[in-house]
Image (cartoon, rainbow, N blue to C red; front, side, top):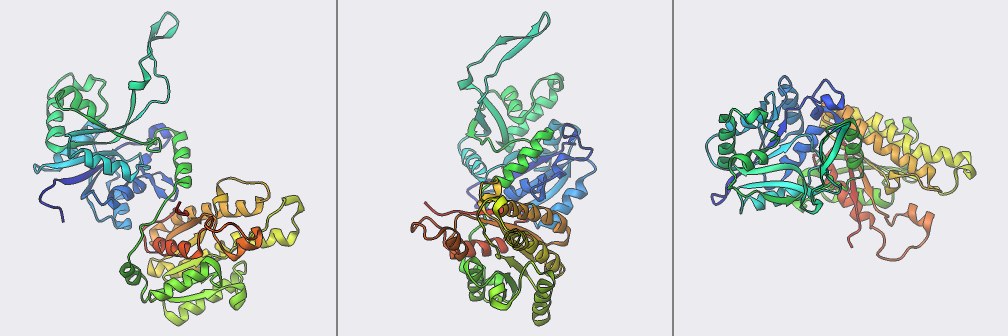
Length: 468
């Protein structure tokens, strides 16, 4: 409920582009990166932000049903409307402003194709709107900017502005509704407006309401706009490397989310898996643990995995969550590795997750459940003596993102936990004793694992870091 002492805050996600510059004939905001469409990544941030009250989406003409389906599938509770955008950015923005009605509010206009917007930026924009009626997000220019002019055989430099005063504009651009609406009313009444170089909303305010100061909130280099083909690649890598987090839950939320649910843990006899088993049982879940040492179930054996899940389903009638913490770590040069080491590493670390995914999806479709896998920080780049381990962990990340995409329409979520160095028996065998306080506890990783299972995340790599 919105307190009477403050204005309603509306996030307007402008998704009216068509994607021509990235070589698409469909809107670029529907392009999938890191397991989700660009539009979904953006809506995740706005819909989940505690200081945003309502979200409106302006979608490319002809694709409103696609956006509405994404809203429905993700259960976005703050998205009130999906409207058709206009033929230009100006027309799309004006349609949004017209749809907001006459009641005063704070409006945050954001490009849908900036999916890496950080919640911190939104919070600072909201705070700035308490003092200003117009707010721009911008970052310093790291490049020298030159002013070009026509020369006898091409362009020549006419001026080099002082870089210390230059900023690169981003979104959201934020306004009191009455202010941005008044600026657009003046702009649309100006016959010269369509030919002016003004390309964004702050530019409209600056030209037509010059007495309104526009405050600058520091943006982020990550808040990039997906415009060109290379941007798609960069955004995907940034998502892959991002430190994603799941919201920490209360004791009551853990119990409400797990009591009466069925959870299957592969690799649950020790380490992180054992702590997941203990925690989930403590919150009332029916937990079934399988491992090589506990009951002879090897994840690299597809038949054994299928049989384990079938037995759980026969006993409980449902499977809500499947967790795989099974893994092996063999260090050494690839050329010196024996065939058994190669087969075991690939079998447990990669074939195991594949087997578990294939066998569990039919059960998870019934419950709109969750598959949770695990990777390692070594997945980001191959390192000497880790070639097999790091490459299999990278494969698990790609598997997570691909399955999240494949299973989205069935309501099945797939995520991957990426713990920092953790004090597990597997690590102890590989590295021996390490200084106290330098390793995560398996219990801390298990707690985050439950947070992820009970979240709406999918297709994400969720980092667990040691507090320092």
